[in-house]
Image (cartoon, rainbow, N blue to C red; front, side, top):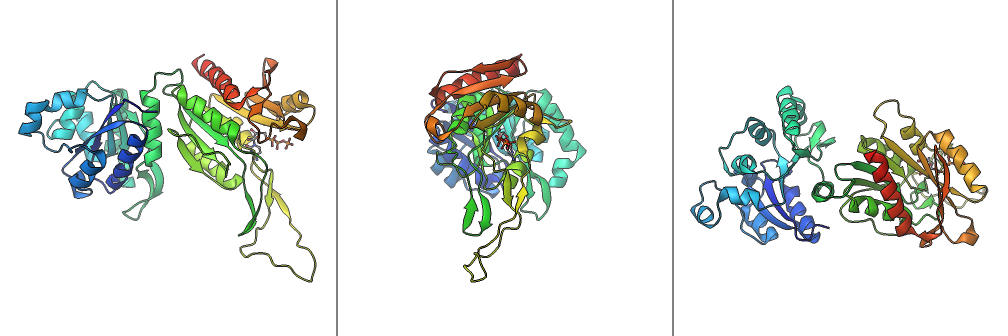
Length: 398
Ligand code: CTP
């Protein structure tokens, strides 16, 4: 995905710096060349040796380094890259950037460049929430910097809240999106995919036959058009695409929580085959055969993720797309489903066993929108994904 791209990675001083080592790996796996820069504080958390060994190139640390001045200089260093990535972006580094300070190599590179910049902030929650940091972030956004994260979570300092650096694959997804020139560039799209597993006990679960193939193909097609994709997947048969943020989940309730955490987004595409019901009280021990008879499973209804997002009163994605797998009266059922759920489009298909669609490589879908039903011929799932991604791009552009 990133073949031929050159990333200048500035590693700031924070405990999250260790994740930047993994980030170097992931970027290289995608074909990118990484030139690392380590701040003085960053070098307190990761060693220059590990950074340069992973990057396969010397790490830049000093502003007035005679060799690099003679060879190329910091101005050229900052401009030769396709993208400058700061991970972790500390409160201090962002404050310097917002003020235009240039008193060390990292801040000088960031000031001397006309290359796009992506920041992955990481800091203590109080520092993140401080009005000074928020002011700096607003300024940096106004100056055109892109952001990925921070995420909520427990931190090394023992506190909980926003401030954790985004995970390496999230950063790779944001980089891929930023470097794309496709029609969905700058758009964030949440995709659910695959089946869900609803536990009965620690070893047994209820599932369905979804392979995750259509959702995966769609995430790939959206990524290829430049979207930043958050791919929330149940335990699927097919591997998730590269260059997207993958959030693996098991149950419908996990999926609902992951979707909530991934919003806001420009579009939500709900291709998962979510179980409608779960076992009301899954056992925390393996159920045993008993002479008292067969176990009786009681069911509870799962949250309807698509409906929840489609009917959000504030912060609803501009486009909400659902899928409807039907075995009969496909168009009528799916048209009613679109109304019931409140989504913009329904991608309906006939999954009766005779069609071989569930788990197969082809799909025959009908796209149902406010304007009516449009049936597409039976084509490969990749082709369905490509057509749908083009439609989504057109809708978000309009
Ligand atoms: N869906 C969801 N959450 C659920 C159930 C379904 O997000 N708990 C989404 C699916 O991802 C899909 C759409 O809703 O996009 C349609 O799913 P389907 O199971 O066909 O809809 P239901 O409302 O369950 O209708 P039915 O009565 O046909 O089962």
